[in-house]
Length: 357
Image: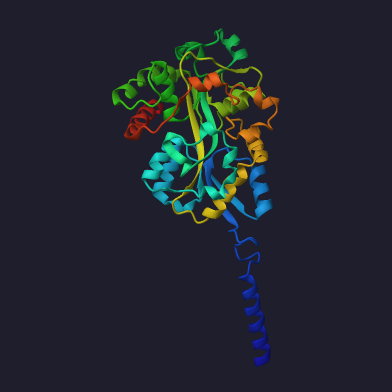
């Protein structure tokens, strides 16, 4: 009996030793990578095809959670700690705040050689000189769009300025971004002010115009405003360029409005959290996404501004002929980069809260 027990114990010990040497149960791939990577990203912003290809090649499963605003991202990191995620996708104007609060860590760019594929105009920007903390992912402008067919039905001429959207004919017929900087930025631009205004009275001064616009707003939506546009549920709206591009591609009646006012430009970036448990895997994933073929999949799936020059060479006419994603040099020159406004962000949030309530 003792011999039988000893044999069983020996077998169990042998199995346990094997399980600690890179087997399927060890949590480590054959190449020594952790088998999971935790990504916190915007909704509808990462093709499943890329996640699957990454797992197939490296054996690393990307566990993705999503947020709908930079404020939500910042709150989640400060309240729950940075160890809950490895990789995040903040917008350029909160990067400095993330660095100041020690919420992200420097990158090892030697592990991201495909950074060379990125448009040089999107590198070494003021918010992150030398790209110490971030790698560009996708860029977008803010855009005003309308449904030409619905304009005819409403008896409304093509708008040329922000004030044209105050027309009572647009009542309950606009979808707008659920984002304080974006929407209030439109109101600031309308009065000739900067999207990066910091003066409290000036920011609060936009509330009067926004309240006039409010009866025409059917929905505040940053998750998928293109859905309402494509389905002809609204006559127009103020949305991110990627949503405008998707709507234009799906619905031939949707067109961009050539506003006399400026629009904003923003850049979403990869960054690694300060307490990331899988930094090596995160940098591997960043480099994987920056491959030209994956940049092509990304741009075709979510048609924001492609910042990957190598990928752009692979894109077809559907992308290149869409003015909301393949933004012209003239439009980019006219656009104003959104920057960190420091404590003034609370003024934007307060005005936005008053508007929505």
